[in-house]
Length: 377
Image (cartoon, rainbow, N blue to C red):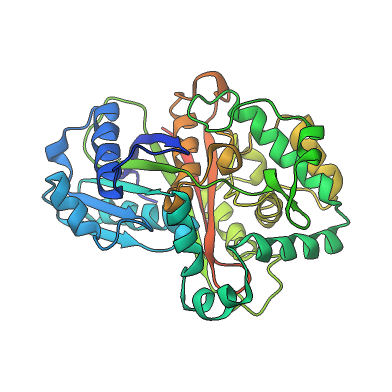
């Protein structure tokens, strides 16, 4: 991977359960872009590339956002791959800057996920959902991932309570993150006492919809602030043609090559971010990437007991899921950690990080999986 392209900005426009009346997605994303550039000390007029991921920007598109922001561009991209969109956008942006197609690219992902917007999204997520899943009475992905969690329990010997180690550990990190929507302490007893949403999933197993946005800035221009480079990344789409059981993601295929290309091993990673729409997906991705031992019950307990630096923002389980921003949330957190700007939750001496994306559920589970290994420079 060329050293020319560097990530110099990582910014999260504060998540909220209750967006201001009249706020539209285009305004949210435009504000996030301007705030991120100001935060990174990047001149607005130097931006010549834009990548966008959003479920609620429509009927507008990336080009409309560029016009609203007053951006004149040489490179533009719009990604529709949900939880995989962050790493996907980064993959294209890094290569575009390395190739000289643009010098400074802003990547932004975000949505205003009100209750009504969330219901519209889950009811008509794609043709498969609209035509085959919604008519069954399934109100969103909870039921699909409840079944996947049950399947995972049967394979690994986990009990439903075991997944609470992930939710509780991430809430402990969230308490240190002023941007997390849910920061109040949560004990294991609190987790167990929460109402069942879709058996065996409890309330704290499910991400709450919020409004917010995340931004990354990639440039080849000189920059005085802390910078991060991509050591390696990889992606898979429809790795099993949706014929498997969902208990392996495409990361099981791509991760060994990414570690090899990055010239690091899972044990070298200081900060870990995995897409966490449900705790079961945290466990599956960690295992697929070689970051979780085969003894799942003991391994999940150690995530909590050892305070492992996994989803150090609190993850979506505590910060909330701002639509397509969920695919970039973990990348923003890992870059922030590598830049040494994470405040009370800062992992000391963080030099190597990894972040995954997972998403685009069709009938039963996600079709896209990707990962990036990042390094402080």
